[in-house]
Length: 516
Ligand SMILES: *[C@@H]1O[C@H](CO)[C@@H](O)[C@H](O)[C@H]1NC(C)=O
Ligand SMILES: *[C@@H]1O[C@H](CO)[C@@H](O)[C@H](O)[C@H]1NC(C)=O
Ligand SMILES: *[C@@H]1O[C@H](CO)[C@@H](O)[C@H](O)[C@H]1NC(C)=O
Ligand SMILES: *[C@@H]1O[C@H](CO)[C@@H](O)[C@H](O)[C@H]1NC(C)=O
Ligand SMILES: *[C@@H]1O[C@H](CO)[C@@H](O)[C@H](O)[C@H]1NC(C)=O
Ligand SMILES: *[C@@H]1O[C@H](CO)[C@@H](O)[C@H](O)[C@H]1NC(C)=O
View 1 (cartoon, rainbow, N blue to C red):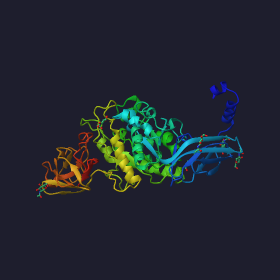
View 2: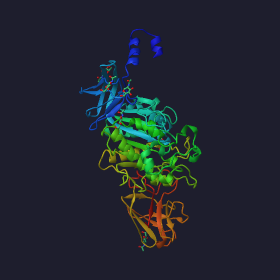
View 3: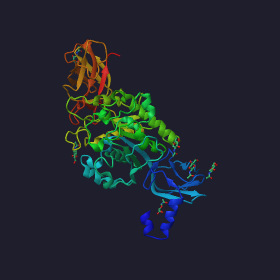
View 4: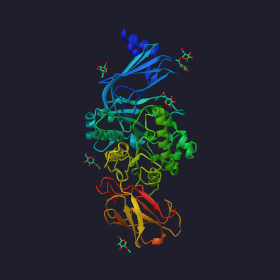
């Protein structure tokens, strides 16, 4: 403002006056090139203004000319638009009457589906870091209707009303914005998910990235689910996390600080759903509570977004996530198998009765030992995003005939020398020496992850939907549990023993217990 003032007369004087007397502005989330949620939901628009004045919002566009009024209370005004079908561009203007006569307008606003992308470093991982990045970046300009927005990295000890920072304002994608430096902007999984979705839906997609490397689920959760799950106060020392992460990825760990600063301010927007890539930082931190905290966070976000949007964002909005990929090839336990299981609320698959309207991209076969950012950051995000998109099409959009779940056992029986495993679908199976294991125990109890009684159980394919798992020398009556792919790094690249018949979807890992 000072520069403008110094360099001009007349016009700049007016803009300076407006800035001083008029408080009228939109919340920081709104801006040129944005995507507002399309019909049947109604988009919420809010901002700040002069107390007791009326703000009139209008939408000028191809065929729509409605106006909406709101009285400013506690310096905040808010309108809910009528449903607008997908498309655009529109201009949205807000005029304050009876006060400062302030006026603002945002242009090139599209209506489409808005998706929130959250998590830690594998969500922050940018398009310039993925395999084949040059070709991916070159495609940016071909998708002008997939718009991006990124929340700045901020923490807060209290719930914020508005974002305290924006890292990428709403933008039409460019190679520069998608490849703006390692772990900065823009998320490859978020972008590729949006792009693949656009190719199916053919209408605008708005992507809101709000994630931070090296963060546990507790930082992204309000106190409600944390209390329900009995999560203690945040540890004082970051050493409690036992993670050897580079400084850039050592995000905040304190309970709720990212919920407060990077999620709470977004609640009053209308969104379609959310995707999430996180869990690595819980491998050694509140790991055994993750089957409570993760589904608990999803429930709480759903409740809060629904309430904040005045009922516009669905109370059960679709929530997709990436099941952890791999980290270490050694057998040092790092909690990855347990977190993968807990990500499904210990069902092994989603959606399930605890986690309704969720979808999951299994990623344990997409490892990348040679990644320049460490094996914990695999570069093959295209497959991850593609598998997520299949889940979104089936679960969020109800598209018929889209398979999105890898094979899961529907029954197991012992025939003397083998466990005969029948899957819920036909499988592409290859013999495996040690990906299946049985727990051979004379005690009629559930075997734990670390039990010493686990032994390799070689598997051979049988019928189109069954495999036979040998008991590995265990007497049939002593087989207490059976598990699959229960290692950090269980199989070769896209070479796990069990896939869907079309070889696209890997079977998720599981553990099944004989005794209750
Ligand atoms: C705004 O309206 C409220 C409620 O009608 C009133 O109490 C208050 O005095 C008004 N404030 C101003 C600055 O006019
Ligand atoms: C939006 O505003 C811009 C700048 O004033 C104008 O050029 C454009 O025609 C407007 N578009 C619509 C759809 O009203
Ligand atoms: C607007 O009203 C709220 C309470 O109604 C008050 O706390 C705030 O100071 C007022 N803002 C201004 C700029 O007068
Ligand atoms: C990496 O990208 C190249 C294209 O440059 C592609 O041929 C190859 O299959 C990709 N690798 C993996 C493992 O996806
Ligand atoms: C957002 O929604 C919540 C819950 O309805 C409400 O308490 C809060 O005032 C809203 N904030 C804004 C800025 O409209
Ligand atoms: C058990 O199943 C295996 C593998 O299908 C088969 O070779 C074997 O004959 C079966 N044994 C019995 C007793 O049915």
